[in-house]
Length: 400
Ligand code: ADP
Image 1 (cartoon, protein in one colour):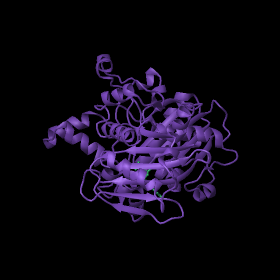
Image 2: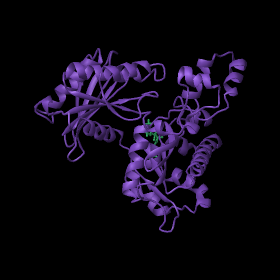
Image 3: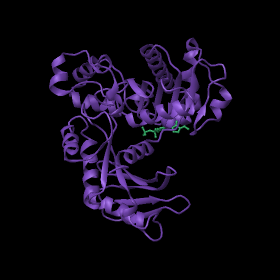
Image 4: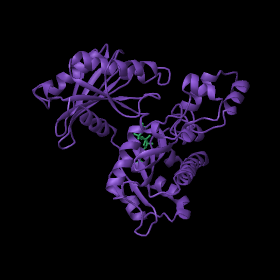
């Protein structure tokens, strides 16, 4: 069985073709600058040179057609005909309160994705465009929507309800949803398997990348997660503030004569380690380098980042009345041994300890980095959202 995975953005469309027997990626690539001059397709097949086609891509339907052409091309293709693609899985940001699982797309599903344009204004319209482009390019082929919010839908009411007047939940569905759900779902289940943790394991997944979030789950079912109505809540991120007193927004508005949209833009795009370090970078490597060279603000930014993660781990341990495994994933979590070490320095009270040599040697591959006598297993598990989307798509379409 072969599954095509599509992640459609407003001006881009990323794809992977995955063979489900081996879970190997047969080909992957991206169409960039859709609807903008200078658009191109980059198509990658392992062991071959990248194929790049610079051509106008006025809309997503054309992008999907280009992907189909590349996949069946005599030179750089990996299949003979698009008939070999069994189904298509789509990353969709927001399923609102309706979807707590992936689902085969029909007109109702498209209507709901459209209804939640307000909650995912940058992503949901593009995600729907990607689905419609695939329907047009491959009529009759099953499409599956995999929602980034689905994992967080298992949160209990006490975890997802904001302490604001109840009418806003009723009228506008204002509540905590959580994002990076596909990653938290994948990594928590992989951790249970790889760490032989047992079916009801209490797992904390730290997804630390440019966007960062943390989840608590029991047996792979979400108990709490740090992002909220939008991805702004929770951890300090590359350029997002994470948790902040909302009165700060009002204060900046009054002092600087800005409106709330401008200030929210600052909290999303100019804050986090970028803002705290005085504008050095959203990239942890750059901020780390500056800190090593003696830059005080860079050091404070990284210290605050680690401190916030440690506080959430403490909170989530309390929420679950214990923790069996702490798992690191995403760009920083998979690669930055120093940051993992800095966070784990706070975990003495849990009896959790990492082996520094194993920690240093573990980059981008599954590993247990805790000591043999650590009371909590500490792991690195690389995330793979595309594979999770492909697995859900295969499961839902196997008997269609
Ligand atoms: P996103 O998907 O949210 O854009 P990623 O999970 O790809 O983020 O993570 C990207 C970030 O990971 C980069 O901004 C960089 O800061 C960080 N990163 C990648 N490799 C390393 C490394 N070796 N050391 C420290 N940070 C790293």
